[in-house]
Image (cartoon, rainbow over all chains, first blue to last red; front, top):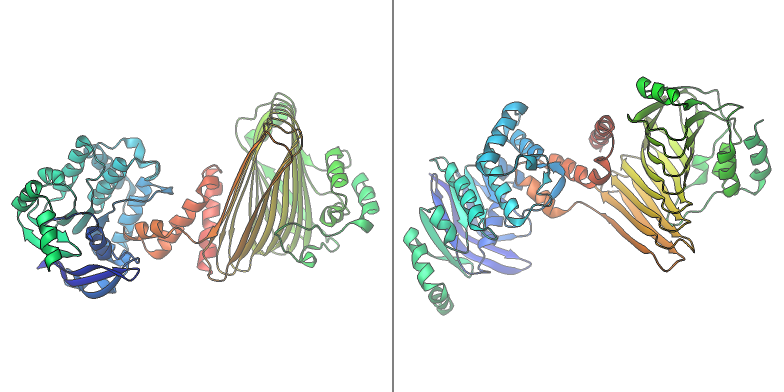
Length: 250
Length: 371
């Protein structure tokens, strides 16, 4: 069964149509990449799946494990196994990084509280895995973090929360090679037949480290091409121009 | 009759209800009728109390032998303030805390004052900190279920080069009308951090002043107020820079639930001659309740050129982006709101005592469930 099914999705923000009929299917266990020039709607798609209230769904469906996501609130979507690593994670200094993750785990566990000691051990392990300094656990959520540190923190949250479907919105932007490799390490560690992932990315660079099963190209609010990893490699040679021309002719 | 009663007797005819910019209150609510019999007691952390006594300091009930010069000056300087005048018409009830020169009290002193049986109560807290001394003092006042009206006066003087952290907390589960007047005077190179955490349901009217009367003195005034159902708060904080090279920061934060109302006025005053003053203030309200009403009135009154001053003010709900982020991790709206409130009060909350943090959180959770 498809983990995520998007059918003819049309989305507007402030009365401007951004997504003009997106069709996308991600099966359980697959890693997909979504590429495309700036302003084509890639981040919009990520945010709409998560349920960001800024965006209005004009038409189409989003199904996650057969459930209609559009009938669910943001937190319900998260508890059903969805995760979004945001492009610009906000800072919330009033809660520590550790307490935040613990609260999120408790929210998923519902009745049964997550025991503190095993949680802290697990957190410590994952932080070491991602080369995040131990002291960051007690710092405010994303407080005074650099852009790269925030992205690593998003991956840490993903590893701790173990979602079924993770959407990574430009997780590679602003990262140096070392940070990129750490982030890729984290994503690859999630690979399993129960985990699927949609990586929204500008550049091919990330895909050298996290090789996707499927690559989609979005132009002007629609997915215009879908292929394997070689599609990303071709794009690196040709750029988006010919695809933009084709899109303009339609 | 003590000297304060004699003085105020002469002043009462000309005293009137004070007017505060941006604050709106009904004087009748805070008028103190004749006091009924009051029973109260106090207790303090034993080890710290012993340390103070060994150093020649004292904490004791106000009595006929207490030196009331500080209180007399307070009344003379505010001779038309009817709340103050009427407060001292009643016999003196409260505590004196005296710390001599050159004394450092390492552990925080926690003082608990409980007013048990009374319909109305006045409480006076008098504080003297000598030169080169250090003290961290938390005074928690709690009130028995029959107490309805309370008038509190806090007066203190901080001598040269001393450091004090003073936290005043008021708690009551029942509806209580509280009027508060506080004044601290800071001498040369002294440092004073004063935090007010009033958590009474009902009405509150307060005025807290810090006078930086000598060069190099520094003060911060913090107010943290979580207001639940049927609560109205009008509070003015003022720091007066009367000498050069003085520094102050006012931080007032309120969370408004249900139908509560909060009005904060913050005043940074720089007198002529107080050059090199550095004055900052921020007043912020987070309005959670649909019927909540709040205002913040930041004021800088500057009569000197060579100064630095700034203020920030905001009234609004939480940051929507932060809310969305918290929800996107599976936290419910209620859980996310709690975190956003914690986030909002954090600048003041993080510096208060751990057990007090727990009490503030419990108060917030209790107030949330009543919405």
